[in-house]
Length: 135
Image (cartoon, rainbow, N blue to C red; front, side):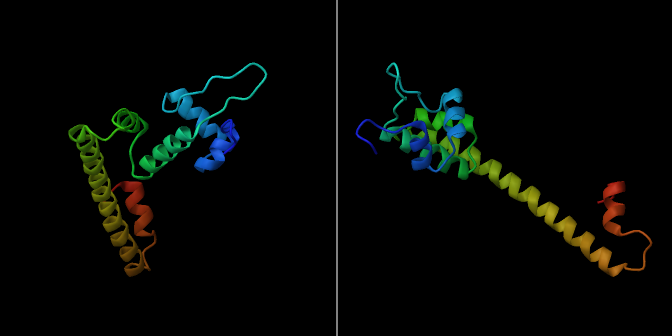
């Protein structure tokens, strides 16, 4: 880091994101935009790097930007009840998605088996099932 802080490009590089991502987070109110002296670039501090990394890690865990905004408000970590509530909701939604994906996996597995087992059928059972919504 330079003594005067990071430019937006340096911030993006240090946080492992693109410049447009930083700008998007600023528009969403997740990252504050530093002031700018006339004739110079905005300078971001080390705290901005940590905040952008926090956002990216939370996104990797499946949190929405709205949930991340709530987590950022609780970032001192002392309101564990609220933090647990947000994380529990995310875990419940993740489990619902996994169950849905497992259902898709079962149906596709059956369709592939049917396609192989009925190789002489005029129409592949996969196409028939998609077209007719039979499964």
